[in-house]
Amino acid sequence: MSVFEVVNPADESVVTTVEELEAEEVDAAVAKAQAAQRTWAALAPADRAGALRDFAAHVDAHVEELAALEVANAGHPIGQARWEAGNVRDVLTYYSAAPERLLGKQIPVAGGLDITFEEPMGVVGIITPWNFPMPILGWGLGPALAAGNAVLVKPAEWTPLTAMRIAELGAEAGLPAGLFQVLPGKGSVVGEALVDHPDVRKIVFTGSTETGTRVMARAAAHVKRVTLELGGKSANIVFADSDLEQAAASAPYGIFDNAGQDCCARSRILVQRSVYDRFMELFEPAVSGVAVGDPNDEGTEMGPLVSEAHREKVASYVPDDAPVAFRGTAPDGPGWWFPPTVLTPSRDDAVVREEVFGPVVAVLPFDDEADAITLANDSAYGLSGSIWTRDLSRAVRVSRAVEAGNLSVNSHSSVRYSTPFGGFKQSGIGRELGPDAPLQFTETKNVFLAIDSTESPS
Ligand code: NAD
Image (cartoon, rainbow, N blue to C red; front, side):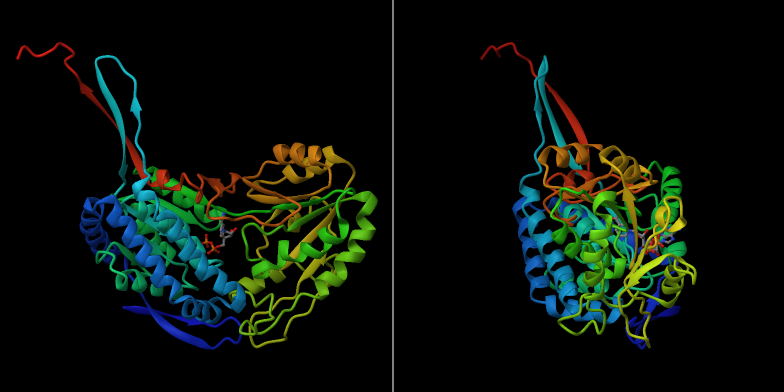
């Protein structure tokens, strides 16, 4: 059996080691999950709802512990890590209402009664990335369990600790043994074994578009259902008629949150040419004001990058001759730090087209509304974005024209558990969260009952 080291990105110390599963062990996990799923699905809906509420309450009692674990494992600032643990609690609470509200339909037909049932799929696999280990796990887990499924989670190699602890909390809260298991290991081993397993009926994959493409191709061999949440290159569009002070003050949050390791990061800031210089004047102090440092410090806004390899990838987008407009500060090390960095490249540069997934933002001028829309849509991705304007008609026009799944006007808010989340184009397939998410984990069954309409003779 092999183990891998989990390293603290802020100081490069080894936090712990984790046993890595082999492909054969996935078979046993699936068999255990199938048995647990039958018990779970047979419970009265009110009892499943109660079990999810108990689980949420148990997570709530461990928010501080989970947050501290994420600080050590992923280098997330403590305030952010608390939000992430709380998000798991909130998602479980929100979907605890679903078992009793998963309604079928009664459809008018001739000769009988026609009704639909939303049946659980069985065992669902969730493959998560390292950037938001807790929330992304929760977004699949809550609705999948609520719909009566068992869940097997393959966490990212660099960040398995919070997922493993949340599975323990689920068992302590009384979930049937094996209903929710975490399977640490390599994507090419455990991830592929889940995708290939005939009894894993659906895969929710969150990660890079490159890996997502491979997962979808493998899943096709089994006609396996997939939800894919992939990369992004979102635009933050600032019109001349916006509150420019507010747009500039909030732009750092739009890109540097989670050190830019955010699929919704607004990594392209598009600014109307007539206010471009003024925006940059306002943006510079906002960038140098980002508090980068010890993730355990309550005042820290940005921590390190997740790993040395990832820092090298981010740095490759900022060579010595890069068009750097200005930068913030970052500690020297140990730890995998990278300062908030603002570039002014041309429209076709790689840094404008590719997902950097770090604290690097490209600022580009545009001429008018049509040019802004063209530029925003000139991307293979379509996940998120922001529109800054005081003109309500423009806000609606541009929101409708931008090809992205999650837009916000005069805000950088992207994710609320009660609203749907997901991408256009190469940013993914399907939607998570929102009221309809449990239906992503059911198969609709239609049943027709013939009715003899002649009165019985008695
Ligand atoms: P990644 O694609 O490298 O890995 C994601 C997960 O897939 C990991 O658990 C990995 O072990 C596993 N994996 C790797 N190879 C696999 C294979 N062949 N079969 C099955 N599983 C495999 O992504 P990452 O670097 O961990 O995460 C960063 C990426 O995730 C970015 O592109 C980011 O935009 C994206 N992301 C998207 C969303 C969203 O909701 N759209 C959210 C967060 C992150």
